[in-house]
Amino acid sequence: MSVIVFADAPEGKIAKAAYEAITYGKKIAEQISSDVTVVTYGEVDQTELGNLGTYGASKVLVDKNVKTDNDQTLTALVVKAVEKENAKVVVFSFDPVGKAIAPRVSARLGAGLVAGTTELPKFEGDALTVKKNVFSGKAHAVYKVTTPVKILSVLPNSMKPEEVSGTATVEEFAPDIAAGKLKVKETKMVGGEGIPLPEASRVVSGGRGLKGPENWGLVEDLAKELSAATACSRPVADMGWRPHHEHVGQTGIAIRPDLYIAIGISGAIQHLAGVNNSKTIVVINTDPEAPFFKAADYGVVGDAFEVVPKLTEALKRFHSQN
Image 1 (cartoon, rainbow, N blue to C red):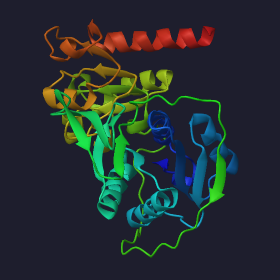
Image 2 (cartoon, rainbow, N blue to C red):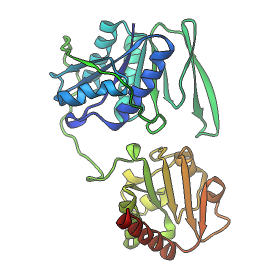
Image 3 (cartoon, rainbow, N blue to C red):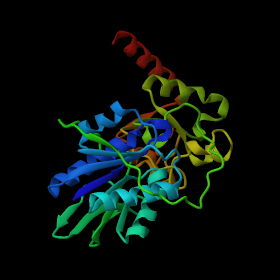
Image 4 (tube, helix red, strand yellow):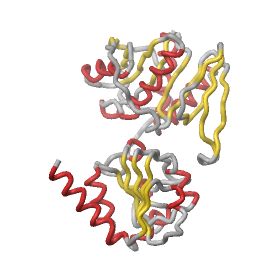
């Protein structure tokens, strides 16, 4: 019996979120005295595949015949891996690919699915219980899964990858997979070469307090010094100041970075719902009554056009001396 972890491999590179999922799977395997088998696809470097053992994988199954992230194809691949390994627990990352595949695998296997969890499950006999946030993080619910196969997807940035002393054997895995009816005709990438928001450990975000798109250099300069991704509030995206893929919040992307800096954002409840799981929140705003200060770990009451350049310059001096 094994714990299966699906590792997405866009363009032949194991995604950052996959390492978090492997650590999560390893901690589950320790509870049930099992091991972790990673299933992935494409032309991933053999050394990179072998290094997955340092994060808890005992075995890696890689299907080199699969060249695409077609949802139907990857669903069939994971189902075949579960059957081969007689797996009882399957772990995904709660990223766009995991969101597409996990429900399909659940339906194919008749397996209970808990999506977007941040905590480790507990086992009671053949049952599994796990907690997850609900109502935009204002409450939590405990789910109980009793099906023979149990599926969990873990929110990115909720489980820090942990290295262990281990190695993984790499096996080519080429099951007979029927061609899916879904055909990917074109893929368009958004966001340029920046850090994808769901994977970013640091995020600098701006709101209407920046007064216009011509001032966005304040956000970008600070983000560059912090090696951070950039984001924005919904009004900023709606006004066309920034692209919609940078919008974080209840109706945008939900993130949980180690550091979230909000510049000129009041902190409406819809915005907070997408960022309130950040480990450290820093707010810069001229209004001392801004709702965001109630959720902040650190707050600066001041003009962003004065505070942010000074902060950026201080970081530059720090980096030049260290």
